[in-house]
Structures are given as structure tokens and as C-alpha cells.
Length: 166
Image 1 (cartoon, rainbow, N blue to C red):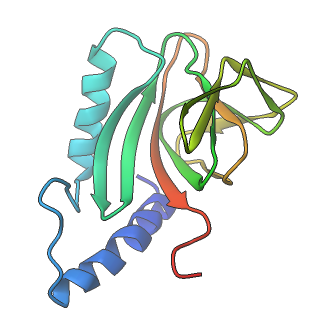
Image 2 (image 1 turned 135 degrees about the vertical axis):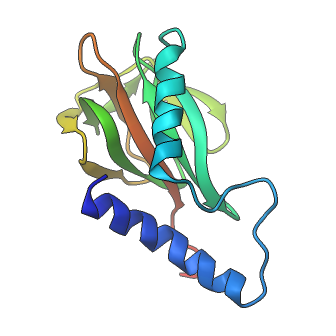
């Protein structure tokens, strides 16, 4: 795990830790800490499954905030737009390409806060490798593909926009 990944995790976990120290209890259904060995176990579990466009597993969270492991292999997962959330991503294993911007092809709305499409037309591709970090602002189309014959595992964190309290 890289230093910036550890720093990022601390930025999300420490404020929650201070809140609990002041008497607030964590929700009973979500973990607030996961060791690297357990995250690697999630990756191994996903690798052992038949290839799928997306396997998502929870890592940690508090309140409305959740970090997840997204394992992408096999056919491409749909392109997405999150209308009210930015999405922070850290590559924890493998490599691939994220395409951002442009326009969704064959757009649909699976729920009130998200759009989906079969692909992106006119976006900008960026190659990602283990340790890389990117953030996709709310309202921006994005699609992630693992490299050919490979898979990519990401830690993703959805951030409400605008940030609460502003």
C-alpha cells in the first residue's frame, strides 16, 4: 500500500474516530477499519469468481459515506454519471483505463441520482496503474476498463456534492 493511499484512508477514518471518542457510536452494520490483509482477501475472493463487469464489496464507512472495493474484469461495465456525488478512486491492484467526459451512449436512468450508458462518446482516456488516484466530479461521465486479459481493483469513495455543511 502506498503512502498516499494510507494518507487518504486516514483522512476519511480519523474524523470519524474523533466523533466516536465524543460519544457517537458507529452504525452496527458497517466496519470502520479494514486491514490490508482483509482488503487483499476481498481481491482474492473477486479473482476467484467468474469474470464479471463489476464486483463491488464494502470496505469501510460511516453515516452516508462508504468506501468500496470495485473489481472489474470480463466485459465492460456500463458508463456512469453520478448527478450529486463526486467519486474518488484509488487503484489497489491491476491496471486499466478510465475514460471521463464526453457523453453517454444510449443513456438510461437506473435511479434518480445516477445515469448509465453502454459507453462514452468523445471522452478522454487515462491509463491507471496500482497506486494511482483520480477523482471524477459530480455530473461527469466515466467508464473504467481493465487492461486486455487483466482486471483492475479500485477503492472507491462517493463524496456528496456540494460537500455537506457548505
